[in-house]
Length: 128
Image (cartoon, rainbow, N blue to C red):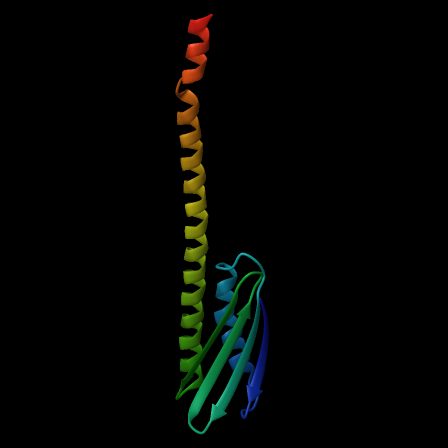
Protein backbone atom coordinates (compact mmCIF):
# COMPACT_ATOMS: atom_id res chain seq x y z
CA UNK A 1 0.00 0.00 0.00
CA UNK A 2 1.28 3.41 -0.92
CA UNK A 3 1.15 5.76 2.08
CA UNK A 4 1.80 9.50 2.02
CA UNK A 5 2.15 11.22 5.38
CA UNK A 6 1.71 14.93 6.08
CA UNK A 7 2.54 16.72 9.33
CA UNK A 8 0.80 19.97 10.33
CA UNK A 9 2.00 21.95 13.35
CA UNK A 10 4.15 19.01 14.37
CA UNK A 11 7.70 17.94 13.55
CA UNK A 12 7.95 14.97 11.23
CA UNK A 13 8.70 11.70 12.93
CA UNK A 14 9.95 8.53 11.31
CA UNK A 15 8.51 6.53 14.20
CA UNK A 16 4.97 7.80 13.47
CA UNK A 17 5.43 7.11 9.76
CA UNK A 18 6.57 3.55 10.45
CA UNK A 19 3.77 2.99 12.98
CA UNK A 20 0.99 4.09 10.65
CA UNK A 21 2.58 2.22 7.72
CA UNK A 22 2.58 -0.99 9.78
CA UNK A 23 -1.08 -0.47 10.74
CA UNK A 24 -2.22 0.31 7.19
CA UNK A 25 -0.38 -2.63 5.60
CA UNK A 26 -2.91 -4.93 7.29
CA UNK A 27 -5.62 -3.60 4.96
CA UNK A 28 -3.94 -5.01 1.86
CA UNK A 29 -5.53 -8.37 2.66
CA UNK A 30 -9.00 -6.85 2.99
CA UNK A 31 -8.91 -4.79 -0.20
CA UNK A 32 -9.18 -6.35 -3.65
CA UNK A 33 -7.00 -3.83 -5.47
CA UNK A 34 -3.94 -1.83 -4.45
CA UNK A 35 -4.80 1.19 -2.35
CA UNK A 36 -3.36 4.59 -1.63
CA UNK A 37 -3.56 6.19 1.80
CA UNK A 38 -3.14 9.86 2.62
CA UNK A 39 -2.43 10.40 6.32
CA UNK A 40 -2.43 13.81 8.00
CA UNK A 41 -1.10 14.29 11.52
CA UNK A 42 -1.83 17.61 13.18
CA UNK A 43 -1.74 19.14 16.63
CA UNK A 44 -4.13 21.83 17.90
CA UNK A 45 -3.41 22.87 21.47
CA UNK A 46 -3.66 19.54 23.35
CA UNK A 47 -5.57 17.60 20.65
CA UNK A 48 -3.61 15.21 18.46
CA UNK A 49 -5.57 14.69 15.25
CA UNK A 50 -5.12 11.88 12.75
CA UNK A 51 -6.93 11.89 9.40
CA UNK A 52 -6.77 9.02 6.91
CA UNK A 53 -8.15 9.04 3.40
CA UNK A 54 -7.95 5.57 1.86
CA UNK A 55 -8.55 5.30 -1.88
CA UNK A 56 -8.79 2.05 -3.78
CA UNK A 57 -10.29 1.11 -7.14
CA UNK A 58 -13.98 1.47 -6.21
CA UNK A 59 -13.69 2.46 -2.56
CA UNK A 60 -12.98 5.83 -0.99
CA UNK A 61 -12.90 5.80 2.81
CA UNK A 62 -12.25 8.75 5.12
CA UNK A 63 -11.87 8.76 8.89
CA UNK A 64 -10.60 11.22 11.46
CA UNK A 65 -9.94 11.06 15.18
CA UNK A 66 -8.58 13.36 17.84
CA UNK A 67 -7.30 12.37 21.27
CA UNK A 68 -4.65 13.31 23.81
CA UNK A 69 -1.94 11.10 22.27
CA UNK A 70 -1.04 10.53 18.65
CA UNK A 71 -0.72 6.75 18.95
CA UNK A 72 -4.20 6.49 20.51
CA UNK A 73 -5.73 8.55 17.71
CA UNK A 74 -3.94 6.38 15.11
CA UNK A 75 -5.28 3.19 16.70
CA UNK A 76 -8.84 4.52 16.83
CA UNK A 77 -8.84 5.86 13.27
CA UNK A 78 -7.43 2.56 11.96
CA UNK A 79 -10.27 0.72 13.72
CA UNK A 80 -12.77 3.09 12.07
CA UNK A 81 -11.24 2.41 8.65
CA UNK A 82 -11.39 -1.35 9.26
CA UNK A 83 -15.09 -1.13 10.19
CA UNK A 84 -15.86 0.84 7.03
CA UNK A 85 -13.97 -1.65 4.84
CA UNK A 86 -15.82 -4.59 6.39
CA UNK A 87 -19.16 -2.82 5.99
CA UNK A 88 -18.41 -2.08 2.34
CA UNK A 89 -17.35 -5.68 1.69
CA UNK A 90 -20.54 -7.06 3.26
CA UNK A 91 -22.69 -4.66 1.21
CA UNK A 92 -21.00 -5.73 -2.02
CA UNK A 93 -21.31 -9.39 -1.05
CA UNK A 94 -25.03 -8.96 -0.32
CA UNK A 95 -25.61 -7.23 -3.64
CA UNK A 96 -23.93 -10.07 -5.52
CA UNK A 97 -25.84 -12.77 -3.61
CA UNK A 98 -29.17 -11.02 -4.30
CA UNK A 99 -28.33 -10.92 -7.98
CA UNK A 100 -27.36 -14.61 -8.00
CA UNK A 101 -30.56 -15.57 -6.17
CA UNK A 102 -32.71 -13.61 -8.61
CA UNK A 103 -30.98 -15.27 -11.56
CA UNK A 104 -31.49 -18.73 -10.04
CA UNK A 105 -35.16 -18.01 -9.38
CA UNK A 106 -35.75 -16.78 -12.91
CA UNK A 107 -34.01 -19.85 -14.34
CA UNK A 108 -36.11 -22.14 -12.12
CA UNK A 109 -39.29 -20.34 -13.19
CA UNK A 110 -38.27 -20.68 -16.84
CA UNK A 111 -37.63 -24.43 -16.42
CA UNK A 112 -41.00 -24.90 -14.68
CA UNK A 113 -42.69 -23.08 -17.51
CA UNK A 114 -40.93 -25.22 -20.11
CA UNK A 115 -41.92 -28.48 -18.33
CA UNK A 116 -45.67 -27.71 -18.49
CA UNK A 117 -47.45 -29.09 -21.56
CA UNK A 118 -48.55 -26.50 -24.05
CA UNK A 119 -52.38 -26.48 -24.21
CA UNK A 120 -52.36 -25.36 -27.85
CA UNK A 121 -50.18 -28.27 -28.99
CA UNK A 122 -52.56 -30.90 -27.53
CA UNK A 123 -55.51 -29.32 -29.37
CA UNK A 124 -53.64 -29.37 -32.63
CA UNK A 125 -52.90 -33.11 -32.39
CA UNK A 126 -56.51 -34.04 -31.46
CA UNK A 127 -58.00 -32.18 -34.42
CA UNK A 128 -55.83 -34.05 -36.94
